[in-house]
Structure formats: structure tokens, C-alpha cells
Length: 218
Image (cartoon, rainbow, N blue to C red):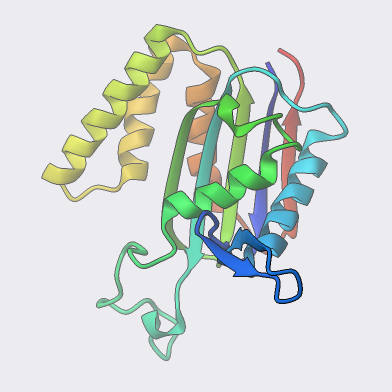
């Protein structure tokens, strides 16, 4: 099994929405990304991913993808003393959609980390406000998923969704608690990776321009 984890510092861009344009000289229509800034963002993610791969070939097995998007709060969320206003929202419920942010990351990693994003058999993505500005934590594992692990992950996510509805806790807190229980039974590298990724979101320092780790064959 191979694994990599890296942090990309900077404002994230969504992908997925398309628009049709027509060449005024030839009259031929073609489809392009509706977000003009998506290309530069994908290029940046791909470069960080390439560095994390360390020259190794693309992964060819089933993929576990975990992405944490930390979004910079707008200035209006802060007081003149630099403190977060009590009225400021806790979560970034405005656009871009987390699914379109994830789409851009998947596009960037194709051909760099994996051959085709169809290899992604399990994925988890979250979007939250970052205390240190915008950054994205990306974790990729090439691992065989057995039925027991898949079922337990599904049960864990369902249980977390029920707790979130009934109590004032965060998804991060819930996941940390349940992952601890699952690891003692399953000893799953994938579940350990989820915890590491959540921890890195909490501790990421944007002063470090590039953070990456690569795991060898296990």
C-alpha cells in the first residue's frame, strides 16, 4: 500500500460547472470550465501532489481520498480587535459547494497520483472556516477495502449524523471519538489517516508554504 498526505496553501477554486463557447472564426463550439480561475488552482494542486509522490509512478489500485477544505473567513466576521464576532457563522454555508471543490482536486490528481478518478472507492470531504487562512489538506491511500471496513465506516458516518442532529457537537469531534473506537477493532490504516487529516486541519500553519509526506509500500 502507498499513501501520501500534503497541504496546499491558498484560496480554493471549484470545478465541475461547464459552459459552451464558440470560436468566432471557425464557428466550432467547445466546452470549457465555467470558472476561469480553476486551471491555475488545479495546476498548483497537481504540483504539490507531484512533489508528495516523489517521482513514483501513479497508484493503480483502489483509492481512499480524504480532503479537508479550510476556508478563510471574510473580514466582516472580525471585530476591530481581530476577534471573531459572536454573530459570525460557524460554518461556510455559502458557495463554493464542497462537491465542486472536490471535483477540482480530483481533476488535479488524475494522471499525477492515480490513473483515473474512477479508482476512488471511498472518499470523505469537509468544508470549514480555517483559523489560519485558506488551505487544503489532502490524503490519498491506495488500499484494499474489505467489506467489514466499508460497513463500519458507513455505520460511523450514520451515527455521527444522528449525534449532529441531536447535540451541539462538530463533525470533527464526532469523527475523532468514533475513529478511536473503530481503530481498536479494525486497525485500519484508512481510519488512522482520517484522524491525521482532521488533526492537520486543526494545526496547519500557512506560514509553511508547502507540507507533504509520502509513504512507501507497506
